[in-house]
Structure formats: C-alpha cells, structure tokens
Length: 226
Picture 1 (tube, helix red, strand yellow):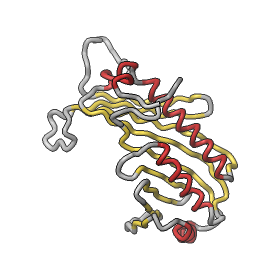
Picture 2 (cartoon, rainbow, N blue to C red):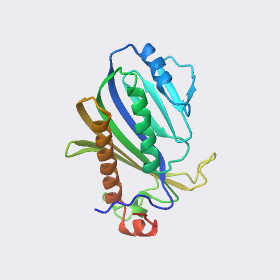
Picture 3 (cartoon, rainbow, N blue to C red):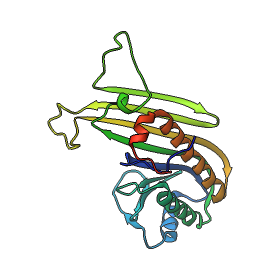
Picture 4 (cartoon, rainbow, N blue to C red):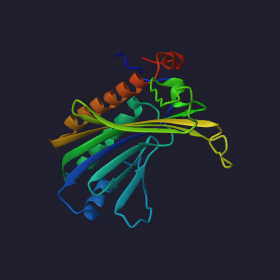
C-alpha cells in the first residue's frame, strides 16, 4: 500500500511515543544527569507532584521522564513525522549520553486523529449494526485490541454528539476520534539505531491501520501528499 505522507487538512490531534527503559541509577540522580545532557533548546517545567517526574519542552516537542518510562508528545501542533521524529531521536541520544540507560523494554507509537462535524461512518469503512440497521447512533464508542505480526494494536473509535452541550468549546456539533496505538515488546535493545528502526516500523504500521480504515473517497478528498 502506497501510504501518504500527509493529508489536508491534517487531522492529528496528538502524536505520542512511549519508551520503557531500564537504568543503573536511582531516578532522582538520573533526572539531574538527563537535564545536564539536554541541549539549550529545552526548558524544564518544575511542576509539583507526588510522583517522580521530569517535564521538558522545546518549540517542536515536549516529553516527560518517569522512573522507567519516557513519553514524547508534539508541542502544540503536529508538524510531520519528518520534523517530529528527528527531534525525538536527538533527545534520546542526549539522554543516552549519560551512559546510564542500560536497555529498552517496550515501546509504543500512538496517534489521535480528530474529525469535527463527522461521524465515524461518514469517512471510515467501519460499520456497526444491530437489529435496526437503519439507525445511526449519535454517540458511539468502539474499542478493540488485536495483533498484527509482533505488534499489538489498540484501536479506539468514537463519535460524540455535542449539539446539546451548553459549554461547547470545540465549535462543532459532532466530534469523532480515531485513536490508534501500536505496541511492541522488545528485549535487550541497547543501541539507538535498533530503537529508531523499530519506532519507524511502528509508525508505518500505525499509518497502515489508519489508511486501511478510512474510505477511498475520504482519502481522495483529503488532498493526500505522497
């Protein structure tokens, strides 16, 4: 399948990469070492919390470091994988420069796509019916977990009727969501190159699920860029 690099308008609300790691130092010490290795583009958010956590951001990404997990998000707007992923790779290399990350254990790539004034049935191949097939629900949720080869796919679809909401800040009567998370358990990945290759694979798998789900008509009308 020839996968588009981008559709217009872009429907991506957030892009999340989560990496589970093991280190050889207590987190309190490790967090300070992480901060010392980051370049000057990053700012630290000192947010009081009962949990041990470090929050950082620059003009392209934001990320949080917890004991055993690193989670990346796009900062404000998602630019493109070609902008987002190099920033993630740069950051991981800087964190690994401490010499105290021993290995990576589990990774995931998750994209949340938002569609305003459309139901899931308007633009996807998904079809859910019961004993009254002509009824179209105004509020709809579907969740499924399955495996494709070595990856676990977590798929969440939803349509929410906002027309009766008194405090509707979205400026739409209907909001639909396609939320796709692709997870992979890994063993003994100790080098960035291996990690980056696997993240690329998970990103491609997520795109295959998304573009396999939407209709040809929707894709054609979305001005895809290849």
